[in-house]
Image (cartoon, rainbow, N blue to C red; front, side, top):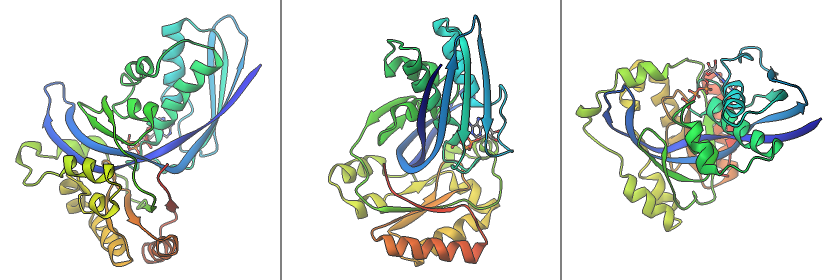
Length: 288
Ligand code: ATP
């Protein structure tokens, strides 16, 4: 029996632009992705068997543990592609907020690709894993790469950029549920009045200029979500009034995050948001 434990890190979008809707229904995007020190933990065990079987257990009852889970899908796809056999069991400790715009499922999926490669000693490059990964979700290639990156195409064209300078990132997940599909369907990509300065953000990252990055933080999906869910805008304002360099929504939401230079300020802001909005999923994290 072999065992392996991996952490799977959440992401936020420091900038999120949508360029156009494609004929296949996907959208061409231009985003800056950053991992945070908020993670799920996956423990894999593999026992010999004649066929490939997969079981999954999670400490949170609302996470599906069957073939709908992206961890299950990743193991099945690796098994099919590389003709693997064995009984694979995964224990998932879920800490990343679910349906939050933090790529929780995608990052677990990426961890499963990495773990399967290691457990079976496969000679497969990250590039190959990313090609498989995009079949399961547009954010999966980024989660396989897991470095600060410019993400283009539907999310699969990745270019490493300089990391976010040291800071503290407060993450707050409102209790509302936002469907990614609904957000994209209601976005009028061709009519957007304003686009984030992504190129300027890449330069600011290169210069290690935190306030230059913060001043360019923008997510065009907020044009849909803040009208429907005013609390997103309210939490952004609370973060800014509590000392954030800037605050925006991550992905298709509803999670809001803010960048802080001082740990104490970030912790005070997090506590204020917990109290004011009655939220339990509020975290002080760091880039990683
Ligand atoms: P993204 O930022 O990529 O849009 P998200 O934060 O909106 O992701 P997830 O947390 O990844 O959404 O979960 C979306 C749905 O996917 C959940 O409702 C859940 O049923 C399903 N799911 C599949 N695999 C997982 C997983 N490993 N962890 C959490 N949810 C999963």
